[in-house]
Length: 283
DNA sequence: ATACTTTCCTGGGCGC
DNA sequence: TGCGCCCAGGAAAGTA
Image 1 (cartoon, rainbow, N blue to C red):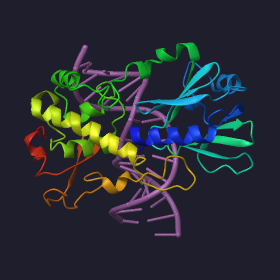
Image 2 (cartoon, rainbow, N blue to C red):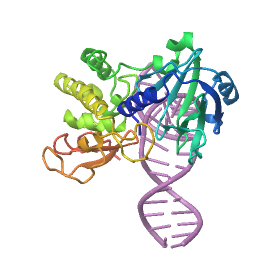
Image 3 (tube, rainbow, N blue to C red):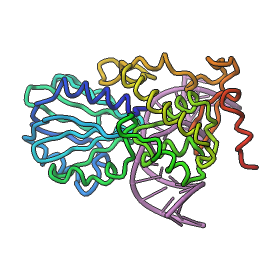
């Protein structure tokens, strides 16, 4: 699932491949992928002739800056982009195609069809609601420990659920939430408002560190698809708990356990992070 | 207001 | 082999 590091890797790849390109036509094969207020017909119509000047990222959102529009793309679970010559046959699950002026296509593929595209006039790009609500980017310059501690103090939700909340900090998904909590040695089920100051500081530090290292490595590639942008990441080899169920904890050797926290598969070390039984509600 | 539940989707894994 | 069933999960919408 693409989280911030994977989306950032896709962004860099796209800039290199299609920065400066002009869209000559758009095909949408799954209408729900285009969010209101724009219909897929309108979406296809207004993008013709638009040049892709640059591509930015905020949290897990990609923002294509065109002449008159900001096109916002969220890959959700399985979204991918590829750039291919126009005469290449469509792969399965190709749902949106941007034809470019140089006989190439920018194609969007998504097995589960969860990804979304939105348009907003370029002069209103800062008013895009979902992005406006996002918390700080998880880097030292934006993500401040005081504000983080304040967010934690306001909720009794599980700490993992809280750091997955994009309004608390932007860009953390299931993989990096588990990795950050392991690095900070904090139980994923611990209520956010019960973290002490040292724990909050460790977690803040861990999120910044894990995300930065993953960005550096080009993200994590869980499944490999050739010729698809952002799929050559190397961080999966650095993962310590995610997907490591029943394997030895790299710190203490205890078997990594998998449970559910807020409907999400959650991996943790019951020794380093403590048993979840301390926090489980009675059934 | 907050917090929990449901919805969207399909491929893959499982049991029989 | 093949069928039916269930599950994964980010974010938005719905409900208590």
